[in-house]
Amino acid sequence: MDIDKLKQIAEAILLAAGRPLTLDQMLAMFTEEDRPERGDMRTALSALESDFETRGIQLVQVASGYRIQVREEMQLWVARLWEEKPSRYSRALLETLSLIAYRQPITRGEIEEVRGVSVSTSIMKTLLEREWVRAVGHRDVPGHPAMYGTTRQFLDYFGLKSLDELPTLAELRDLSTIGAELELDLSDIPGLDAESANDDGEAEAEAPAAAETGDLPATEPVGDEAASTLH
Image (cartoon, rainbow, N blue to C red):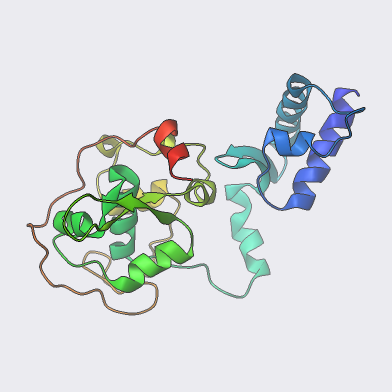
């Protein structure tokens, strides 16, 4: 089967799937008789990516595989297809998510020690319901608190193949910068420079945590190996 035909098949499969697919999942769409070599399929995907360079869509590779998506610069027009406004994320939720991404595995108590305030239940509920984080084990200390880490859905949502693609903390000046890097819309959030309400409109508790407020810890994101153990 020639590369042009493979490009057409790959494009059709990815558009019909509406979600990321791995190379093996795409190859499974072929019968044994007409299944191409892995190298040929990769060549077809690379050619398809080049074909999309001048179009409003693009082929990208994320943690869960390949997907076809709208280019970021086209989102202004595409967003008008939906009446609902995109979700807005509070500073408190963003801080919590950032700490989990950079310090995983981490317990809720450890997050509170760094932030200096309690993490509201609704924030953790939101992160868990959106499947951006998950419990990956329990700390071997009294109470055995759950330890949290990010998921493949987190990587897929933010267009990342691995945690190594997160910006290093040295590149981030403040949470607004983090929001830009993670493509979170922080505009129109009341009190962006102070602790603000979370997604559900419930004000985050300001009870002091066990330690004084601190900045994000100066550690690098863990790599692919750690990411794979979380799923």
